[in-house]
Length: 571
Image 1 (tube, rainbow, N blue to C red):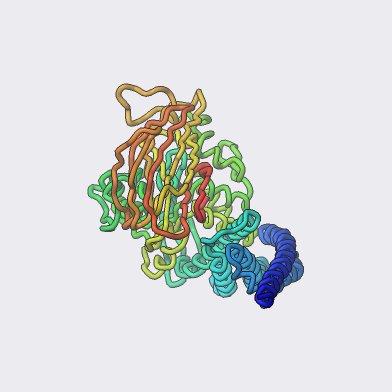
Image 2: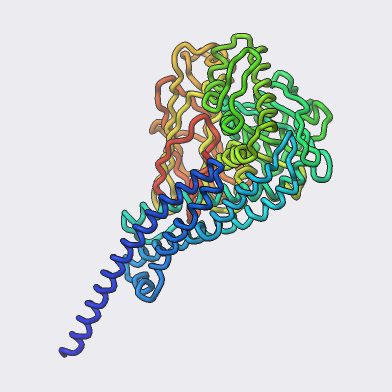
């Protein structure tokens, strides 16, 4: 009888020794990864600053730390701890985090540094021309970096088991950064895949540039307040025309729509009215609407549509420096968002003059981008804009659009049935009060397969706004108090999702249901008084898996409190 007890005791002691060793080893790994994280931040800052020389010099120390961390998670003892009930998942998560870091350090970051060095030395953008041969070499580097980023992200797939608080927070923090990096690399890979042909490698191309104003929100950003036509021919880019919405006309009949498009938006006039063209968040539909409407007006063939907003302008102005308008006003990276969304309406009471200046701003920025001395700064600005969700591209050419469709810059709704959520607010009052709408979104589980989405909307419009910003063009009867906004609120969910219940300020509310490219969506109209909160709660069924939250491109990003495994797309 004593022998089995001794065996049991020995087994327990061995397990304790192994766990004790693994705990000590785990602390060492944590210290290595913490040091590596600091070094990685330095490399990232050097890359952002365009300093490929210092970034390359920093790589050996970073890789040494990462390799040490990954090496400590190998071997039989560590493998055994991964099978310990309850706690084993923590060791497995730490090992996968270390391996993901190793993939980035050994493959993704060196290729990114080499790509930056190539841009710095070759300067692919000069005097209004893009060197397409350099882009081909750059693509090879970025393709390898993006593949490594995808591999690292796959290693950090969400963990369904129990994780200790300190482990969970560190793993989540690392995963957030890896997802952001992988997403940026994928966007760069997509851009370089389509750039040669879209820049006129095989002949001239004409693009419609929609300048969106988030002060009057739409699903893809904002009302198209200005536009431009640009031409690309074998890498040479030229500005053909700039205009404002005063120049845009309504076609005599709607442009063709995708059969999968939501009737909610086509019935509202998205296929016939430029001011409603981007009510849908599915950028290909919005872009086709804008292109088709312009073709009907001008009889000009459009090869693609580019959507941008003041945040994109801000990123570009970081590379070019300020633009000075004809009246002497200087618009910089720090001021352009406030200028377009607020200051222009306060400063210029002459509406025609204001719109002309907005068109001038877009034209001057275009010329400064092409004349910029730093190809590195310009490409980095476009990369930041692309990963923000505020820059959107659509191509009328099927092969190019196939590349764009699956990327953030392509702006398409997902085609797979995966957990998905996007909250949209759009201006239904015909004013500019969305510059002052603030949103917070909380997501929690509410029973099996259900999510409770609580959105708090607050209108922080100040007193004394000019009438063009504050007065409602929908002419409500009876008149509403000063500063009260009318908002179209929509929630988009997964393909198989259903909206189970809707409350507004705690009271049951009917919602209009529809499907947009298969996605369940619901829309209702809200009155949003100044200086008050309106709370919308939606109960939604969702498929199993990691939730993707798609941030609508707005003046300010949502304040998020998402308490389920998730990733945020856009900002």
